[in-house]
Length: 238
Image (tube, rainbow, N blue to C red; front, side, top):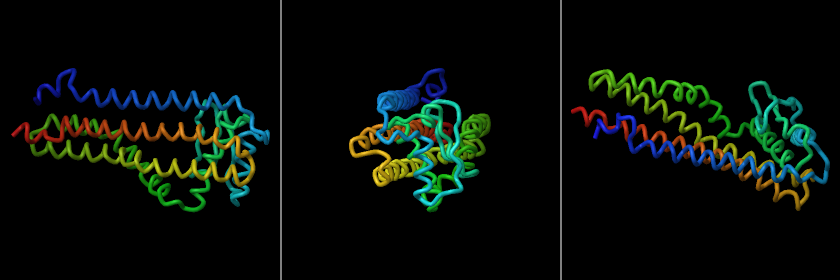
């Protein structure tokens, strides 16, 4: 059984394939949904950048700079330098899709202002998650070259490190869901989008949320594969 796991092919590869397919489907859906509603011009005529600035100001946030970045759907809020970065397809677009994405990023800025606990936890996990995802596999592979006790310890450390990356993905979910909920509520309260336009934005943000669910699912499947491959190494060697 142990030899089967270390051949060029083993049954656990299906977990990786399933995770990759889930992520591809989610990515394709968010792109198609965004493109569909990018054709719907908002009645207010506000661009993504203008909507973002208005939302920030309405929330009493004046120290966050809205700026343009290149790329498609590369939008993000950077709490380190308090910049709200909007991509080519959002910054100057007047579509309901662009306004929705801009409002979502404003949701993160508002979370930062209000010290939203899941966001604080996610930010604190960033170094550990990056460290874990980068070193998990090298440490696990290194453990295969040592005798049982030392090797098992290294493998278990590698699994723990990868678990930190999975934890980061899980904590990301409530952060993203909350930002989307805030976006929809604020867009309605400020009148930037009317009652007919809000359902379109909900569909765009809902599709975007699925990409985070897919990433979390893929990470969990990868962790499960690592545990199946190496978690019982000591029992196999004894």
